[in-house]
Image 1 (cartoon, one colour):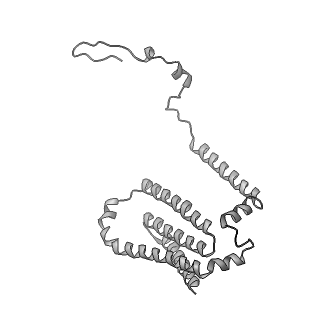
Image 2: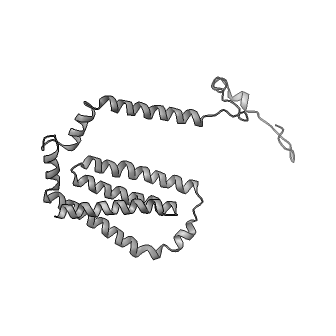
Image 3: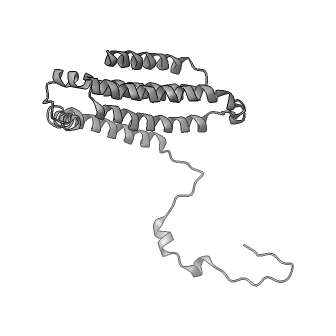
Length: 203
């Protein structure tokens, strides 16, 4: 009973936060709703017994969203003075949201102890005593090894392509000659001058 309640709670919040991510006009609010969706999706993974995917979702995606938030702030002209002006008004809502997240974590732990994880483990084709990370690693590096290597190759090609597209030659810059810099001596770059009073230094 409690696992079903936790599932519907997480699923409802995931769908609602996903809709609010798209519907929000402020990009900062969209990112915050997306973070909420990721946290609740991690709760769904915990209910299924995939704790590795749950923590991977929080660590990787929420961390990437934090970087996305940084780029949004850097690229868009966000008026922080206007945002901070009504900061005190949102304290009650923020407190309720924090209490709700803590309650969801509590429901997850209760659902885990109620047997939802055990039911998922019985339906899985792996042994119940095999850790989730070890089972995932065995499947990933045996059955799907070539697919995993192909994904890494695609990411490598994408990274090289991004570097090639952004690297462009500019004619207004002087090229760097490493050999000339290595051969340069202090006497070639420093001159002792003794200008008179009121006279400048001639370059």
